[in-house]
Every structure is written in C-alpha cells, then in structure tokens.
Amino acid sequence: MTSSGKKSYLFYQTRRRRPMLDQARDVYMWDVDGKRYLDGSSGAMVCNIGHSNPHVLEAMRRQMEKSTFGYRLHFETEPAERLAEKTASLTPAGLDKVFFVSGGSEAVESAIKLARQHAVAVGEAQRWKVISRQPSYHGCTLGALALTGYAPLTAPFDAMMRPMPKIPAPRAYLDGLDPDDEATGHRYADMLEARIVEEGPETVLAFINEPVGGASTGALVPPVGYMQRIREICDRYGVLLIHDEVMTGGGRTGRFFGADHWGVAPDIIAISKGFAAGYAPLGAMVAHERIVDPVLDAGGFLHGFTYAGNPLACAAGLAVIEEIETKGMMENAIRVGDVLKSRLSALMQRYPIVGDVRGKGLMLAFELVANRETMQPLPKELGAFDRLVEIAYDNGLIIYSRRTRGGYEGDHFMVCPPMIATEDHVEEIMDGLTRSLDTFMAEAGSALAACA
Image (tube, rainbow, N blue to C red; front, side, top):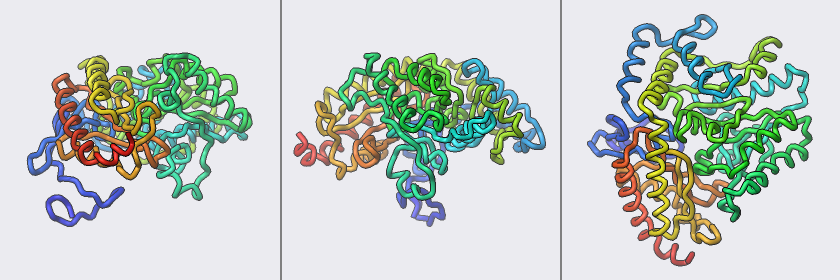
C-alpha cells in the first residue's frame, strides 16, 4: 500500500513504499503531507541544478508549443543540433560526434557497441573484450552489466551474458597507500597493462572507467598519475579509452567532465544524469570522429533508440547547460564542495566509525568502518548502508548509499546536493547527518562495541 493507503500498481526493486511527492523547488522536496526533505543526493546524483528551475521550464514550454517529438530518421531538429554543437564544444578536441540516448545505461551500451563496430570496420574484428574495474557500475542493460563489477547486481544474469575482464579499482585508502604518490597511481594503472597482456592485446577492444567513482566506489578520486598512465597504456596497445561520465558529467565535480581535472582525453564519453538534470530523460555518447567515420563509411552505426535526439529533452538539456554556465554553478560546486567536504571530514573526530571521506566538488562520500586503522568494515548484519539512509530520510535528509566491498559488506554514503547549494544548506545537511549518525550509533551500540 502507498503512504496514502491506496493500492499501488507500480513495482520497482522492493516492496518499500515512500510518501507521495507533491512538489520540488531548488534543493527541497515536499510530500503531500507537507513534510520537507533536503535533497542531499540530487536524486541519484541527477538534479544538478536543483528542482523547478524557471529557465529550463520556460525552454521546455517553448519547445512543447512547437513539437514534442521528431523521429531522427524523418527530421533533424534544432534543439538536437544546438545541443550536439554545445556538447562538442565542451569535450576535448576531436570528440565532436554526438549520439543522443535516454539514459546512462543506453549511453554505455552505445559506447561499447560503437567501439566494437569500429574494430570490425578497420579490420580488427578479433578485438571484443572490454576491461573494466572491480567494483564498478556501468548500467543495467546486459551489455553494460557485463562491464559492471558488483556481484549482487550481476550474479543472477551471468548465464545470460559474457562477463568482461576486471582489474581492481584504485582504492588506495583500503590498501594503505598514499594517493598523492605518483607511484601509487602507476601501480594501479599498470594492472591494466598486465591484464591486457594476459588477455592478449589483439583481443582487447576498450577499457572503461569513471574518472571520479560513482555509486559503486563512492566518489573515489584516482591517485596522482593514474589517469595519465591509463591513457598511455591504452595508446600503447591500441585499446580505446571510454570514460563513463554518467555521474560526473554536467559539472558536479567542478569541471563539466570529471576527466577535465587531469587533462586526459578519452576516445568515447558516456554522459547522462546531470546532462539534463532530471528535467527530461537524456544522455549522450560522444565519440572522436576517427572512431565514427569508419563505422559510417562501412554502412552505418547498427544501433539506435526511438527517443534519440528527442527535441523536448534536448531543449531541456541545452537550457540546463546554459544555467550551469551563466549562474557559475561549477565554481559554486568547488566552493561549497570544499566547505561540505571539510565538514564531513570533521565527522571523523566525533564518530570513530567514519573511516574515509572523499570526492571532488559536490561529488562527495563518506565510508563507515569498524576499525579505522585496519579499515575493517562494519558487520554486514547491521545493514548500515540501508539503516542510516532510512534514519536520515525520517530526519528530512535524502542521501544515497551502496556497499563498497563486493556489494555484500562495507557501507558508503553519497552526499551530493545540487550545484546551487549554499553554506546554509551545508549546515542543514550536517545537522541532519549528525542527528542520524547519533541515532544509528545508539541503535547499533552493542554491535559497535564488539568491533572495538
């Protein structure tokens, strides 16, 4: 039953019900009973510019008065052309071929299918393996899921797909290594080279990674030297580099693309979520022209989605980027993100179970542990990843969580408010978070004592 007592005909992951949403503005959301929630995770790291932005709504209204759909095989549309041009202007030189989709899984699926068709077109059909990281999450379609390193989500479907090779994510904080030491970055990146050699370089098609980790690694920032070394290794073996910017694209880290922090250009980019910031289903694959041209010359890209380049979604996406740029939201993400990260780090003094705080801009996370010295995770029976989220929700604060260690234990929490957040909002977030942690600590007292 829903919170209103009426039967629901919907189903998603579980039977858990939520209050009925009434309205949302800026960083807040209200249910039909009038309770207010601070959207401390921007949904699922989607609503980058906040809710009900007047400029975006007006742009969508104008487009709705003209057309809401134009099938790409029948018409070109001005919003799609303008958004493609704007997107290409934000990417590294040469990445100026844009393929629109409706979401992140579609963007990743498009990326690996383009990579494969490129290999076939240039006479390298033996290349088909896409190496990814463990843990990682790249989407829920079978192709994207094969790249995902998160057993609870992949195991039931292993028989239906061909899981791809994995290398460890560069989690220096768990391995006791210095992330500011270039040797650490090279150590993790060199695992890619070792895996390419093990698999047979002639069979490896691509490597995919998130420049700043998303839900599976909790805003993991790569060690110094990692991103550059990865690029060098891919070039050495003719392997395409795909950046999954589904969460990081759109300015959340303080740059429009997360990889911009390291000046590393991939061959293909997947973007969604903050691209249209929740105003319409929208994503994109952006590829270098040298990848696209051979595919088109060989007969065309054998792939597509009905809503690709939808004019209403593209009008929303263009207006979102305009707001990000004209309102200085990326600069704000850095400034307010620094304040929020500092406040989250201060939790380590008050709560011994806060073991790590990480991230860039307003892509932040903290991880709970039983022992900060050994980074031993909390007992999985506590279900901290779920329980703390529920307590915070009751306190009017929305945060996002996943299990860090293979998906079965370890608990991290994403704190990623919209890029319009202010220092006052940081104070509200921290108030709700500390009250929630206090409650969780009290509830789990005996279990936590046993870990000490």
